[in-house]
Image 1 (tube, one colour):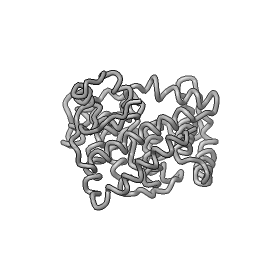
Image 2 (image 1 turned 60 degrees about the vertical axis):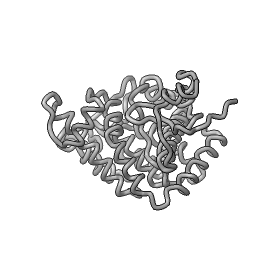
Image 3 (image 1 turned 120 degrees about the vertical axis):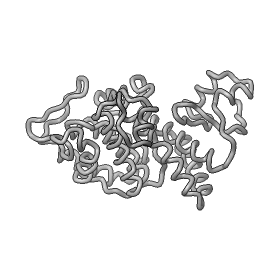
Image 4 (image 1 turned 90 degrees about the vertical axis):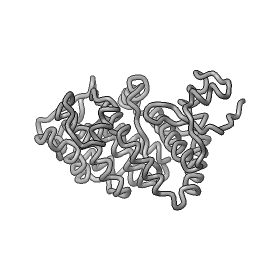
Length: 296
């Protein structure tokens, strides 16, 4: 469960975000567009794609085939980018089985047309590790129930609702392929509908931070770890946008530590815990140069 302190922290970040953004939506658009390769790279890498961030950037920027990259990997990058950009213009996109199928068609079209755009059919069973997903006949009613519960739980804190939705969506595993990428797309769709910026689920550390969350959910029906994970990701997303909206100079966290005679390990750990307003850009931690850390 998200603590009251964390709720207040996010509320303060969102308030400043709304106050500063004003007429600077063009800047926010540039920031979000610059994150596209990182979003695509990380989500695909979590599914074991071997494309690097640089290769992903090259594919998306040049829109051309690369000699050493397979056609499937190219489509995985361009298709996911296309869905992300499609949802940018539809922040109030309705959560429905039919809309999920449409997004899935965009995601897997040209990659696996036998499965693209439809939930699992009779006889199509899937497993993830030791988890065997529900039978195909259960998928649609379970998805519809999940959506209805999400829309009706008005008193539940938004990050807790999103966390539980994601964990249950991945447990249902409604599609034959692309479930992880779909689930992470839906997280940002849900955040956008509430006026929050997108988050990036990082590939680095997935085995220590992201994967264990699902085991806890399936074994204990607890989503606390993932709601806390989303809190950190959203806090980081706000910190990045606020740093640019304030117009201050931004430096690498390692440079900040050296200038201020701080331990790089200590300040990096603080960044990971989001007790300092740091954020990652192309995998490198950064912070406002003039930030004054309050030491306890």
